[in-house]
Image (cartoon, rainbow, N blue to C red; front, side, top):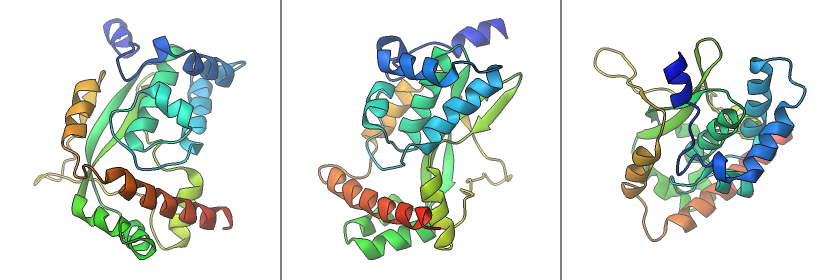
Length: 217
């Protein structure tokens, strides 16, 4: 594990904890007094998980996500990995395909005509989450925040995000120590171009409405 441990502790252009005092301060604050590595992980994961989920561009630095205080699956995962690596916990990116949440998008479509364009993304979507080394690789998904999840459940949705499988029923994961190249290529393949921020803004307002339903649950 010695070689791999170093590989999964490195900063990168997007995982920029080495150049972000805010990330290092937050990581130290979250893990101060923790009894062991698992407790450190749980505290860091809880912090990132609770950050609001929202749509944005793919290629954001971890320092940008912690400054904004919210993000989508890739941004929150990148921040989680940056925080973990900054306190010596190996972590890596896991990329795969999921099926669109029909309950979520049908609710958003009723709230905004621009949100209805999310259907242009198709039935399958790219998704990024994290694997952390705690004696073995364990997966975790910090994407959707708890209030959003509670709201979705109250509206009839499910917490499980169905994974796309191949003809043999196998989920094809891409595991990366450094995801900078993949994420920049993904950003170049984005569906929405000049009007994407308006579309994202409408969708994010819809998420906040669902979040309010979750808080009242």
